[in-house]
Image (cartoon, rainbow, N blue to C red; front, top):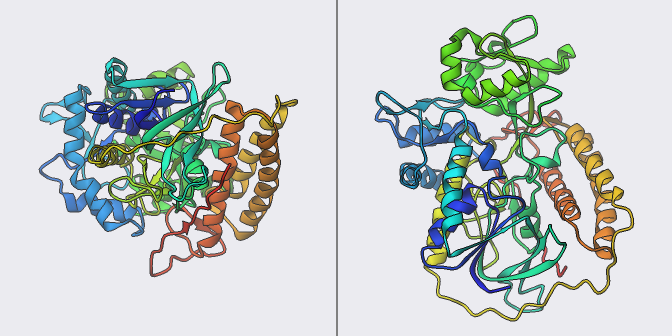
Length: 525
């Protein structure tokens, strides 16, 4: 394959916005596991948080972010993101994103944990609208080479080549259509692969969210931090025919009430902010009520707002639920918590740089310090935009470097897999015990059980990887088990309950907030 100035792995909002910024001057390769439109960014319903109203303030947004993050947030990173919020939104508007308007300008909604209306949106399908807008521009840009149905196997670094310099020189990438592995040399590489929700049995994430970037960076020697903080969205639709369908935070923000099957509200018993409490509080409250009463789900009721309000504010949610026989303008919505967002990830600075030279990270795969112990609603797309711009600016400021000759992928010692059932069985086992042992409420005993099972799986998967040709499913499984290991290791190190990590053995929050940082070990293969 040709050499590129920048290799971007991942085609969500972080990847596509960076590609458009970089392609003004550089040749970019954009790798997408499926189609450009298939990403967690495209599934985002609520919107993007930014200070856009005169009644709001930068300090208020920062304070809300820190309260939600239980003061584990990096203060400088948080201010950096919030202060750049308006410019990020203006850039999207300039790209043509059709944000919803009202009589005063752009309509702003309020979500859990926010003290003001600051979430700009496109009805209840913001991510999809943003993704469609940027995808059209990406496909039309001649400086962007699009590689759909390709999955990155591993980064190519100096240490893997036997060099003193551990710089990243690109990646090996599998073409899922024909099974061929390509070497993609690049002077700079940006990981924008998203999170790892598929490590859990129940998730609001798309099937592509398998922790690929986090696992690859870990194997390349990068630090990974705060992986114990997995956000469980409180309100995923509970229906046998609905897979991973999210009921937006904005439903509660616009007056939706959480109720038991008999119609009784329960959030007043758990938090004074009731339905507008941060996600970790609401998710634990729902989990508590379900386990206490033996319920399969609870209910989110917005019907009291009237049909015209519901249809105008939540047209997509209304239509999807109606397909399943639920008229949310008249009936409550059955909901359960589900794994939603990975708040930890690859440690980066405010320019998106990782520990490995030439390797940048933006979006959910990163740990910038913005989210702390719990992400504030609608800060995720904002982080994608701000750090994609920061990383792009840093890459554009770099002088061009020469690339060494990169070896082809070596398949001389492997054969075709004899039993693919091993992969599907291990995938299912991993997701089930992670849900049972490393879920919303944790204990040290459960975490140690998960660690033991992970170690057994890792040995089995590593042996399979060493002896058989790589496949799309094998690559994802290998990355998922690494990500699961990082989550459990971080959780065992945290001897307190803070934000999204709640331990029955350590129920108190320590006076000083500290990050959980794991240091990567460089691996040759």
